[in-house]
Structure formats: C-alpha cells, structure tokens
Image 1 (cartoon, rainbow, N blue to C red):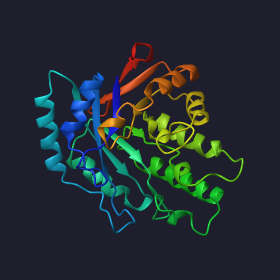
Image 2 (image 1 turned 90 degrees about the vertical axis):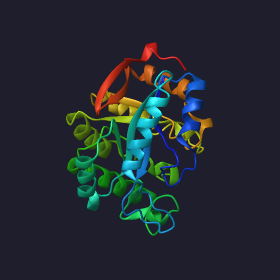
Image 3 (image 1 turned 30 degrees about the horizontal axis):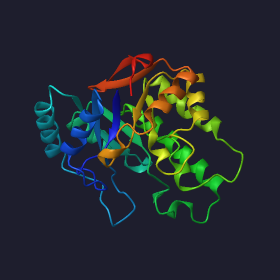
Length: 266
C-alpha cells in the first residue's frame, strides 16, 4: 500500500518529525510513502509562512531513504499552493530542485485564504465555488510542473454549497487539460477527518474523471500526525474499484508507475 500525501515538521502546520511518521508507516505495513511538504508562496495569513529550506529538506529525505532503505520506500514530494499571479515562482523552483512527486493544490482564491473564511465573505457559496474552480482552471492551463491535482474540491471543506449546481462543466474543463497534459488527481482521504461525507474529491467527481478518460490517480491521507496514515484507505479503494479504476499510481522523478488496484492490501 502507498500513502502519497503526508507532512512533517518541514511544513509550517506540522510538528511531527519524519522519523515518527516513517516508523508508523512501517508498523502499518505500508510499502511506499511520499512526503509532500507545503510550499505556499504569498499565503494570505500573516500568522503562518508556508515556506521551508528546500536544501535541508533534500538532505533529510536522503538520510531517511538511507536509514530505512531495507524497510520502506520513501519518495521526495512537495505540495505547491498555486495562485494565478505566482505561477512563475513555482516554475523557477522546479528548475532548481528535483522531486519525485508534485501535488498542485489550491488553498486560496481571489488572494484570500479559505481556512478562516475570508474568501467567502460578501459572496454566495455558489459564486465562491465558481471562482475557486475558475482560478484552478487558469492554473492548470498555465502551470504544468506538477504530477497530480490535490484535493480538487477542497472548497467544500470550508463552505457548504447552497444550490444544486455541481460545477461539473467547469470541472470537466479542468479534467480535459489535466488528462491531455498527462497529469492525474489524488483521492485525499482527510475529508473523513473533517466531517465530510467522504474523501476529496467526492464520488461524483471521481466518476466524472473516469468518464473523461482519467486514469492517473493517487491515494493520500494528508497526514500531519502518524496516527492518520492510510486513513480510510480500504473503503476508498473499494469505491475506486466500483467506479472502474484499475490502477493506483506512484511516482519516481515525476513519472507515474501503475499498480493494479486488485493487488493492494490495507
């Protein structure tokens, strides 16, 4: 089994040393994990800075890979928080540093953060969702240095939609770009931890991705503490099987490697 979204104390919102997470992953029988530390330039909350020492991170990953080489495969990833006006900064980073796996996530919209709700002020939920997906569409059209889209419908975690609009047409446009570019999406199971009905994205969006021809899909717990590694993976894998997905992807040097979903054991 593989968990391809987790954080350590290199991320500003996490205090867990890598060793603790790795030890727990080994204990749970995970075969491969990928650390995906937060890099969110110009995050609109002055109380936190989502940046870290990339050289120190590379050194630490290599130390962990060597230390645990006989027990588990550890990959070097990153989660970039895209915004339309700073895509060039991430392009520059990708030219200077190498990663096995890059998650393209959007934690802000209209230069406002989602977490405390400033993005939702003075706009309806429907307008907020539309703007969120429009900005994400812009980002995938103009930024290509990533492996998968992270928690695509994250906006639902912070604001419940007050209409029947599912925004599938906008999301279909996003998927067309993503699939044509040879990229994928993740299933982020942290949704279960935050009181949602399931993972992110929801089942209807996963079905839409399959209908659009999407095949590249990863599993991630978005863990910030060791106890949530592999969170709700068994039922998530069953859902993916029922939708018709045949493979789960891992990555090396940003190239997908496919594993039969029927061979996975949680």
